[in-house]
Image (cartoon, rainbow, N blue to C red; front, side, top):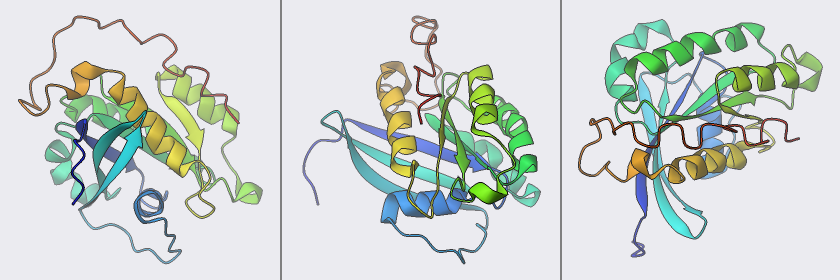
Length: 209
């Protein structure tokens, strides 16, 4: 067991339609593996990973959920206390991209942290020949909803580590999100500093190649 103190324990959610590669992204990030035959998630799966951000140790509990309707009863407890959300679509599926707005609405409805940090991830960017959603469309959607944006491929590793690290860094820069967690993950922090850090929520990162 590592004895170094952990700066924060964070709950990260991965949401999006079934089949967009949520579990593959998680497996690539936590175990550096890729399984093309990975079965659909039934209910909820979660993995724990400790990472270093700016010299600080951060422990992540990453929750992966099934994208299917029939698991909707799990929703409120799944979202509770989450400080970060990774919204995933498949760049070869326009339908999965169009559903991002629905997922955002669900996040808005059930998240107990109303300043939860979000990153939009266009997965399967290795399938360039089958692309149905352009990078520009992804960037535009992210800007509209004040999210960070990156394209990734769980298969080739591209963008996977960066997506998680960028999100965690953004959370760490917002102490109100995680410092009170140990005392109460349900209590919503007061309004002070609400406008802080909102501008440039993309911080130029949206257009990063």
